[in-house]
Length: 240
Length: 240
Image 1 (cartoon, chains in turn brown, red):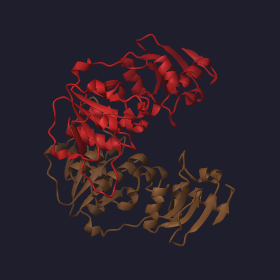
Image 2 (cartoon, helix red, strand yellow):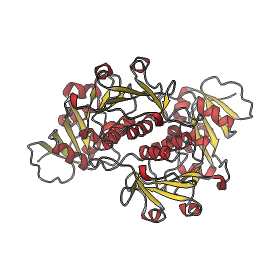
Image 3 (tube, helix red, strand yellow):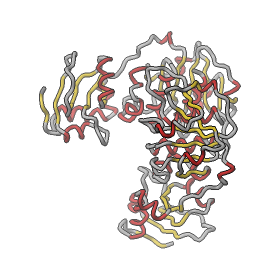
Image 4 (cartoon, one colour):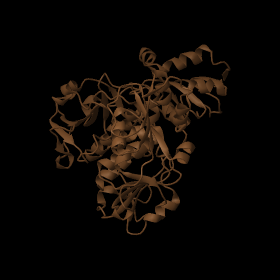
């Protein structure tokens, strides 16, 4: 295995550049770290390049692999206590045909990477078919999204698209507080899109116009709203 | 109003020292920021000292108040875009008598401040009486807890105590995956303690022994678990 001892090495610099959304989008790549994630990524055949400071089992696939020291690893990792392996992956492609989507989560301008990662994890847990994001939402391959998703990114179709493309054939259920009906009164539809809004502003007025059902979770008036990942969890569980 | 123009001023240093858990505990104080939080804190009468770079309405209470420049404010604030006001508060005291607690959330070694803040917010939303933490849990007055709680910290009794003190008179419902029954099959008890565990290790074996009911949320096997704030949200909503 080739060794890289300088954090100014061009391969290291190129990998670190993937922390920037623009570079990720241009190259169709992203950074991951950790042994469990590597295991998953290898299984999905998306690993392009590995940087490691620890021993790894022999790889079946032919992948560019570099032995690095702790200084280089810390430069590559976004974790305070990196697990010893950082790697470059190709961005994931949808696994299902769109016509086979029955349960979709649509995120309207979601902003916080931790929330997005948590929502991906919840969507997998409750067997949703896809998490679709409005184009103004946070980047799916942001390192904090990848970390919070705990591997869920691999297990669900997730991509950017306009909600208008999912209006036909789906019941559009929007989570909002005004003019909404209580969750407990709603029957689970067969094919639906569950829409969650921005952390501060909720669902945009354009998206709200497309709603067939506006739903709210009954709660104490003392508090403005639930965290979007928590509200999403309650709704995804209800409609699972 | 007195003006502070140096970030080395002793008042500023003393306030910044409240970022350390040890100092918060010694002094019984903590730091908050933002206009909405200030409004709440004033209403609860816990504000000791205000540092502001913006105009504030005249205060009814007699509080130490300092005009600061942007440099000082940035030193005091833990936000990237501070709202112009940082202030020192006394730690909150429980508002209810313990014998009036009917619905309690108990956090067994919770570790992540964002999760704790989110759980406080959810507990208020669903009218829980108290959030009690095992002594090894993250500090309630950590700035990330305060931020994620979005004011919920003011609205619910939250403190550290041993779960053994809540065994009599309460149904102990523990969220865990092994030997658990499905949530949907459980009736809501009158007085209960809902126990949520650590992000990585779940509920400790000592706490598990005290359980009257072990409950799980049914989900896809492909994923290990839900985020604890999401699982907590689903459970708190179910038992609300």
